[in-house]
Image 1 (cartoon, rainbow, N blue to C red):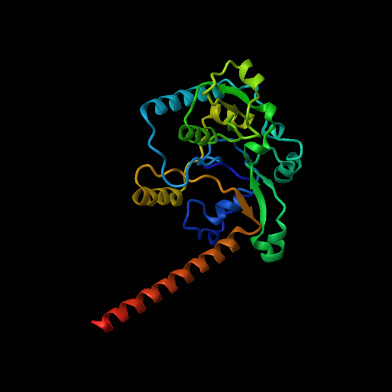
Image 2 (tube, rainbow, N blue to C red):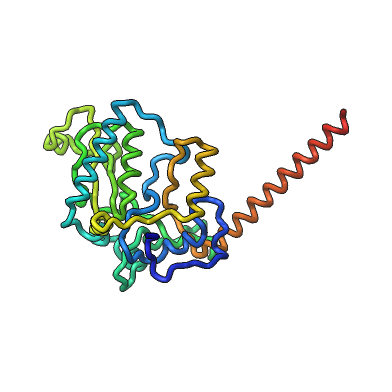
Length: 282
């Protein structure tokens, strides 16, 4: 299945993006999703280009973590809807997207920055932001992984979890907003060198899991990933959902394409001039 959005945007004028997402895809991300399904890409990015090579132990621990999450998701029948997992000050921005529909969203509305208001036309200003782990109430996270994942394995696990809508992994490292207190570590009987990982699962993710619904990649996305594999190798990572959306993604993409084409023409002109000079000097 392709993941049904309300009033999906299918204007061919939006298909001008040469990346994983077309402008039309981005426009559809602003609308409620009506059918819960496993996502076509993670919402939490692990790596930007190629996935790292893990050692045998790290690979085994990553698989152990994935298996633990899969089992937790399969039994999460009493999980709460995504809206109930959000921090109170985030909820109004979420409800502004879903309205009175029966759907859910991966995004919340956003207010453009003062810099954007001063320097960008309305069409290019930020309108939505991706929901990420910071948006979730800390009390909603479940202490699932009590063994150590390396930093790279932890990033790969985070991306794996976020392939399910409303699911997030929280690595309880030394960052102030994520760090466990000594009392919390003692209560969980964690060895000193272990960095645990907590997870949250939404009702929408559980429904997607039980139904078997999966958002299939479009022909455009398949072709893009094939190009990436040629350029980056077999370790090319899957693109993530964009963090920011804008008031008019089609207009913005056209602006970026024109700018990219202008740079390309300038580069070609410079290269042609250098070639001409080189030939004249021979």
